[in-house]
Length: 160
Image (cartoon, rainbow, N blue to C red):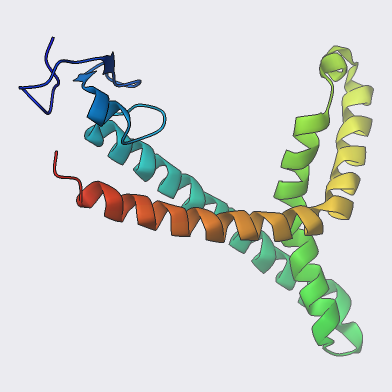
């Protein structure tokens, strides 16, 4: 079979997503091997995930700011307390996500009270480690945006 993009070259593999036949040159453009259309779709999906991460973090930070002004700012505004509250609340989803990666599956077989205790403990731990996970997530988002932009430019410049 011939390459989808180069009719004069023999195909040596397929796109991992759609199965289009690709020549050796086309197989080495993207990792994993993808056709240009699937690479663009993959890049767009990564961009959507990054945007959702930014929105989630922003909403939780706004909630943290709201909590500060309604619950903790009784004696006046303290900038460092405000920033701390915003970062802690902004980090809860990322702390929760980090805990999901290390939680064993044994918790699947608990009674209802066990689940309640589990979620309270997990929420508390998310508060404790969330700020660190949040800082890591911000770095990942910035790196992901830069990488996504470079990939978008690269895909646009392909002469396939």
